[in-house]
Length: 441
Image 1: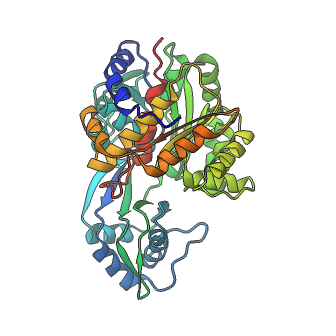
Image 2: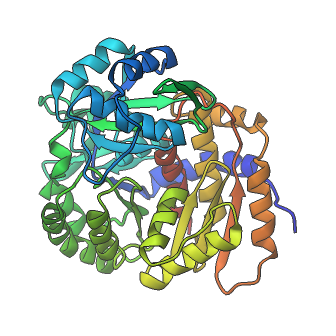
Image 3: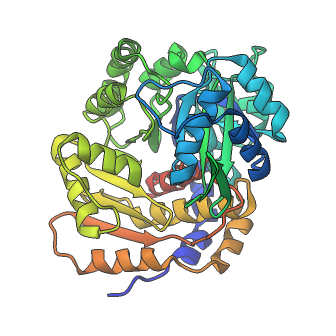
């Protein structure tokens, strides 16, 4: 059976779901990190000037790489741009930060998976409670929507009542465009895909301090969140720090599973995490999460960890990779998000229309890519003018034709060849997915 486009249907149904969510206090909880991004305006001419001045050898990346010098920046960033890859790296020298701010035109934006997801779902009108690590005025203002709350003095309060007077936590974002040419030691190379690099000058998220009153609130609360997003550990590089955080979180996640059995626990990792830290996080959160969320790069990485090489262009390989992960962790399913489609693979979740989540994730992400900001309902409706991805349609049909004991649901994306924005698309997608966990009785 060919894919049936339900995008308009789900958008039409959203107002009633928003009203229900507010009236019945059925809202998601998003945790754990936030920061202030410095978005460097992409300019291939300026970038090539930097390469001409500071690229001294063939680009490469080694484990544990950091950007201590401009030569490091040129070598590492050009390696990623040549391949159209996104990535996370530490800047250890403030002079590198100052140089980048001087060379590129920049603007502030919101950073952190849970913070961006909260801003995205808040723009659509849904309430959400968040845990923030950076509660500065600039971050809070970008998330300030009716129904967006934080925990302060052991109660939920509007986000602007939880502002901190501490300095912002800065992350530098360098997004680049498919088709632009960069000069690598005198030869011209075309960037194959639009993507971004995130460069941390940040010690806070090496630790991810978690507010005890946030954890204790949900330990005591009789009101169950519709879902609980776990994210934000991608900047931790020390396995001992991660071990400490996991030991801190484990009893509270145990409580969430027992006291709030209807709450869907969702772990969104990151391709860029330190491999050992990623293993620790996956192993522990895999015991408590109902769903893992990931992109194609992370799927390849996880499959390789368990000894399998997969080709993400082939649906049989994608499903093999997902099956391998499900065989290693007791989660109910995996949500895979790509530029062409979104997929759920696993056990059918009782009372959850997972297609709604995949569809809303796609349309909200595509709208952000199209207009450069979190879209409201009307802006999402305008995104319906974009065609469905041909590759996504092919995957949807191939999934429909397969016989399996698992539930497979594929929703093609509204495809944009040259996005206006590439930052936070996965986080915006994740926000949209959580709409489907707000279950009307």
